[in-house]
Image (cartoon, rainbow, N blue to C red):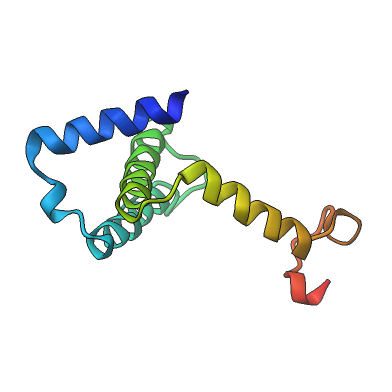
Length: 106
């Protein structure tokens, strides 16, 4: 499975550099926010962005998300699917299809 390959690659990368000591949940959450801002910066002045730069910044965001998930002992796929199930209940297809209205306004 790709996720296990990503997880193993990240674990090896971090271990080789002894960076785990810096990867507290707080620091990883900060890093996600910082990298998310860099991703958003790709679109700051135009909806057209350099695809390679977007890929790099998105990879940074995902990397820190995977590292945080590992640090707090959760499976990224599992928590996304759990959240999707809860969100599906908030946004039933018959009320939400084609609308961007918040769930409490449907």
